[in-house]
Image (tube, rainbow, N blue to C red; front, side, top):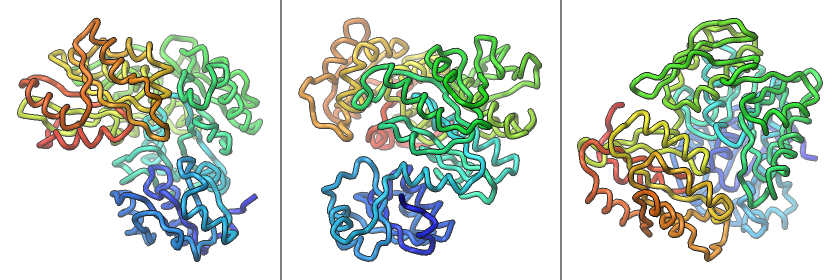
Length: 462
């Protein structure tokens, strides 16, 4: 067992330091007095931020980069045959996987707020961070996206609170130590690791089992899977939702012409006040309720919740306005890559934009596309035109099933859909067929953001 405190003031080397989580962990260690070095294939704004804070980062992976390291940190995507990991093994340098490091870091904070769920983790964690930060609780924050309020994906606070995303993939969250655990929802995903829904539910139950007896489990009452998981917690339990019978509930929902919802916040049947969200989408009401439940547990009042949620204007890659394809054609980008997320994001776009809506979708991983194929077929009904891009492989080999082209073919049986095999082809197709008044929504968790940026020729305001 590695004791992180033993390495304070010594050199910790991150392989793949540019990742959204790895860069955040590196920043926290820098603020806590560790020497940080790292390597990554690409230079990004995140690596530049770390260099400004004192990290030494090299582009590419070379064995000599770890020669003087005291501890090596890697992600699950970095395999044992990576040249830096191989050299670390030869030199006897201790190694630590990213999730294990996150688990060790959070031990240093008395209050540890972990936000889990198949969907919405980054948004709900960001909302919670905004509320607690603006209430001057000085939390340390670690999220899977970039939040303008904290100037990035991480903030090292000087308080006793650690707020973090708890990801279920490969059971990463079982290495964490929450005192407050939120479960936003439990849905079918990551089927390259999980066998079925029962396997997923048991994993979430094991996560809640990490809570101390005096901890708190918070879950969505509107979802049967979440309720089942929540009942297994060894601690006190609270629920949130819209449907009714919840500890924290939204009532009297209203939506403005920008797609932003407002609602009355009820706690145990008493109305505390009205909440107005600054981001579109009905699904964000549930994210806001989860954040509100945490804030109430921390002793905050309705004014703190209102101020924090009004300040949350979105996380990068979450229904983000990139610019215009041409005058009158706005381009939005969102991280949605699961059928439930695609459907919710398109519903948000449709409520915001009654005219022609284009959706460019990059499927993420061969396994997800194959195993959730029929759910994807039913996810795009709010789009007028669908373009399916080639599958983003991520960590997987090509399965040879051509499910990207098959998805477009199936969609085209009931709506206008086409498969295009490159970003250049997609860009030309949009330029040739879009007309003023259209909206282009680009969805995916891979490198599809490059297309969104490339075709957005000017910044516009919502």
